[in-house]
Image 1 (cartoon, rainbow, N blue to C red):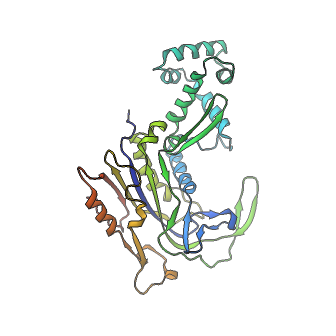
Image 2: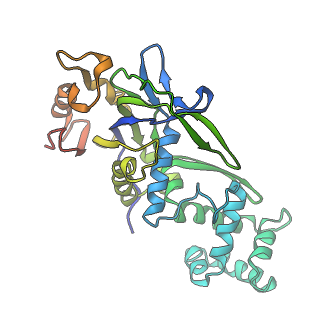
Image 3: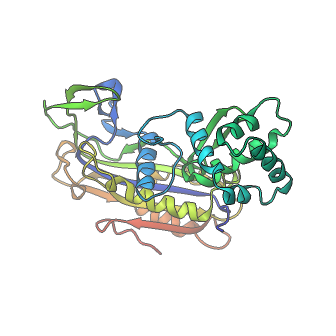
Length: 337
């Protein structure tokens, strides 16, 4: 099995949005989120995590923050549904308690008493009068961390009978912002906006071009709680890179990854050692082009030389950076060594 991560990392992720709405603001008629003082575009961590979860689900990976069947459900209903499915698999139960034979013995006594009825087993284990509450907690803790990669990545909070616990995610994303000033497309198009139980009409707000940058951390200390493994991090990198363009909708079409850089630190180096990595990249319109005329990546001068210098100066034995992981699009020629 893959081991829990042993190093802290900081990462930078850039992607572009062309003629679309990267993240609508429900308080502003679903216009693209903006910092109006700087004329930059914003995207929340929640929006990006939704991209990630949808992509993971499309690859057949089970996630926790999801519908149950075709219905939206509460946290406790989702957890209960997962428990029911799990309790029907005797081999899985044996796997859960393989290191706790005394727990397995008591669990099987409960299961036999309740004639293997999952609903009744759940209710007895969670009953406030049940003397062995640690058995229920151990079961739920295992299920949450072992079955759901999004909990191992981003954490979660649970307040259900017999299990009141929260996990801080080992992977944290900040809000993203555009490295260029953006312009909304001048349009009065009317579209149908689908809500949970009805639909309304609204304007189709989009922007011409946004080069969005997010920073984030992968923390080895909180990974001890969520169980985030080296394999999980590999999946995270691949999924973050692919999810932006892999799950297009009408308003999110034309978004593409440009650059992912992860600084894996040596022992003793903590997250944020170099601050926000976005501070080491610079953009400006190319000569002869104004901010309002930016329509594509090649309209920008993209300068990452300060980040390259930072890596060269601080990588190697006895220095902060152990390893640098890079993914880049064909038009962003970032050195890999």
